[in-house]
Length: 185
Image (cartoon, rainbow, N blue to C red; front, side, top):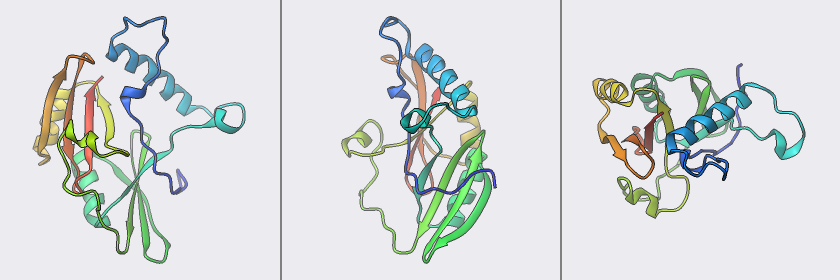
């Protein structure tokens, strides 16, 4: 088994990527590229040290209404592959899916419900506190948009340029209404 299952509910935001104060003129894209390169190289190595010095992202966990439908959606729409599926407790089933070294735990638990209400489109989705979206990035966002649409994904924002950050973003929802953002690298 490539990875162990863990009840982690982690996410990351490209907006929180650290950058040196000595480079305030660096564009958002430059900060993302520099930060991502560092994080990617760190994630491929075992960090030295102990405690929080060894902290790395492992996966994102998403509670879903139907495990079979969610596995199929992530495979068909985004190209994830099922790594492992198992019952971990009475009434809890987890499917670990992977793409390019990134893992998502799709979790089904009997009796789960969405208590957030109607999902709001960006930027109003930020009015509810908590983890707000799953964020990816790609080299060619317009090509990605075409692939998503050919896979039947309805886009909310299609390569929308955000001048404040100097790059574009596409937003859409998965089969459970979770917001996914893909940024142009």
